[in-house]
Length: 337
Image (cartoon, rainbow, N blue to C red; front, side, top):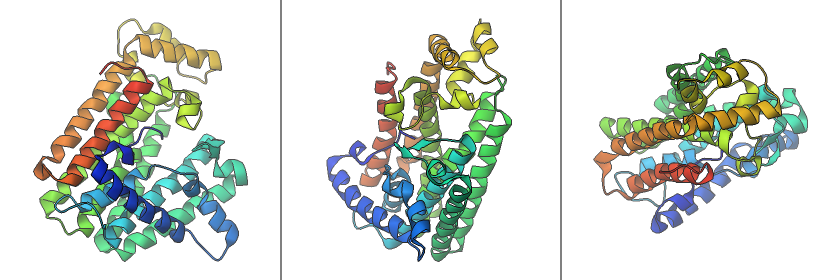
């Protein structure tokens, strides 16, 4: 996904500190997937070396520091974030197999490069490594990561059940993205709080931040899929429409009066001209703008969740990251804020 909080979204003094933590995250990710088998190591590290914002592990680091200061993150906070990032990357391997994707992060997908069977096994390996790391951080972290993997699967199944359905509701969409996307951000933040031994109400607060951020993240990503180019996305544009996944902008557009033309096009595989037509109709119906408003509401809720940590450098950085989501999509999609 393109629309993500980057280190550049936080204040300068925090940017430098988080940049140092990111180096530690990158090194730990590569160590985690190193094996005696050079071929497995190459496959498992393929998307790690392709890059990524590392939002989830940096959120784990930041949430561990909401009652202290950023900098010199603990080993546990870094590794907790790494465990979540490995789950995320492993899920991308599996997603690309299901979607028959050929590009991910501007490089050939693992399945395109080595085939579906090897991609599935490499994804499984990443999930296993993530679970191993989580277990080293304690029973609660291990249980949380296992539950999060289950939620990812549940969210993805909900999405598959609604494929090519113009009758998909906003509630169904939200249930799906809460599992397949927001649960990982929520878990990253919660693990940060757990390994830092925060108070229970503080752990719940950072968990809520992660959930709302994750919801906004997916809504923004879905807006970009309808409005951005392949060059910007690093993956094919309009892919959701190709796959029959009708996201919030489409759902909101279909709810507007006189959308018979849009509804008639949807419900079956589309050719390139039809995809362009749907993108235009959704935009004309106000679906993009109303989805952006929903993302705005999630970002506001995320910021509210961090009110107990007002003044904390970590809280400021996290809120800045959430606001950066809206700034990025409003610029690319040309949305008036």
